[in-house]
Image (spheres, rainbow, N blue to C red):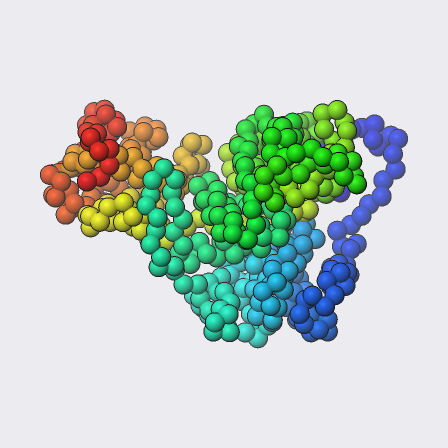
Length: 484
């Protein structure tokens, strides 16, 4: 139940209350009902399926209740039933591909562990689940690095895709590292089945890019009309209904007026930063409350208070953690009614691999790879030394590297231009002490990784923050507008 302070006082004067504890609904009863609805479609006997649930699913769920905080340790605060719903969505995807014990195990750990933002806790859950299933982890160092191979008929590590990366132009292409493929597997089952879901992750972790790539991958299976809605602090329920009206046709149906896709078989509306709108004094966010109604009842009341049903419409919500600047906690009534996944930020190795492949899609110059390594190194040092605990606007993420590289590709580089460009981070730092620290980081990066590159373009030293105007005024644009 929600907190009392979120209700109008009149509600308590004239209404009775029934307290429903979270443990009042047995998980076993929910799973058994779900199993009866599927019947023989699961591909294995009901006895075997329930045995897997007893030995793996229920034990892992109890482990989560005991070791994981359903608030601070999860990317999205959710109830136990929300986690159960998440697991069953992954199990349905496993059924479609041929259910077996190993794929059931993956469905459980992805449904539960894929929501945990704490990497260590998630890794512990994977190890515990594999012990329960009496299976061997393909990668002991990284328990999450596991998937099923139909060709080999066993669990294997993810393998980086060696396909050529499309040329980086206006939009950044997706580089399929093992971690990226793991993130895709956390929410693609929800996307294929048409279930509503939330993607949570730190700013710049690649949520929008992952969704865009996943939609492109299933374009051959189903014709989708995608659209986006970028939230602000003032976004309201009316903005969603207006967006749906532009994407749908209004027709008649058994439930009255019905919104159906105007183009394609399904409308996918991606709502970005769903926890950015400010709640009212009762801690209710109008946008989230409206989405909760649409998700729960497959319809909503329009501005004339008339009921409108929804058909073949899917909502994808993305959000940063509620602890981030300007974000708010959203209702568990909404989060527990949809599926969830946590998008982890790329590791240092992944960042180096991703940006090296991206830069090679544009130019074959080996020196540019050294510059990319320097970029990643500077980014790591900046994140470690300048965090939001110092100043609220000290928020750096991989998106900064992408913006940095896109600026880089517009100019013909000279030594002074390159080194001054590396000082672009200083535009966001406060005070001479922080800028001096950045100068030291840049000098170390230049000495360790850019020595050969700077000499090849005529550079002799690294300027510091006292050298004058910003880097953007010192670069010379080329006629071609790109790296030669």
